[in-house]
Length: 235
Image: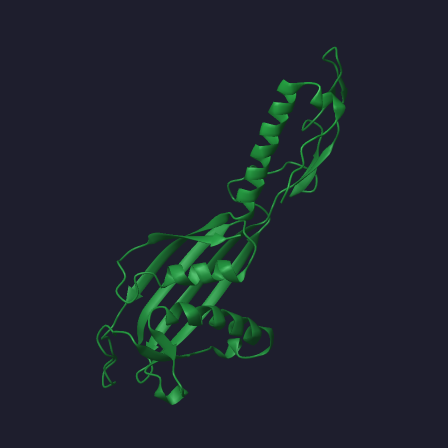
């Protein structure tokens, strides 16, 4: 990204002004370059529950806290096995797979050989604007026209033009991802974790991957209570 300095005669005839403009252009260039390589923060509220060793009566006992490597298979609800839901679940599981792999958990070669099952789910709620934004009191609710957002002043300080600008609130999203791990032989839930994030970012694989990584932070022995896990994602 290159910003070309002005080469007009007026600027060249004023060395001080030229130097000032060159400094400003350099600053803008550095700012633009830093923006190209910037990141955004995915701040997650995470809560996890570990119940390794729990089992129903007369059922095979799950192992104690498992040590990597481990094998698993994904488990789906009936509603996640057809149509668009199935396609969305494919994408979600594809994002969860590398996150589990980093913990030493790999997909089993056959479903019957997996000692664990993993169920992953995600949910998004789209709001018209952030709950902390001031409401826009225009006739259309979420957006409106404003006559006080800009004006042109003449040499006598008199307002000669006050344009009307449209104001449109950006959308705001509440998202949650969850993973539930069960002991395959007994069906007993041995690990449950949730990560919740709110913000203006559009849905991207990087955002969901960050949320899954946050949900699996401190696995397999997480602390109790809600904790904040921040992950930076490249733009």
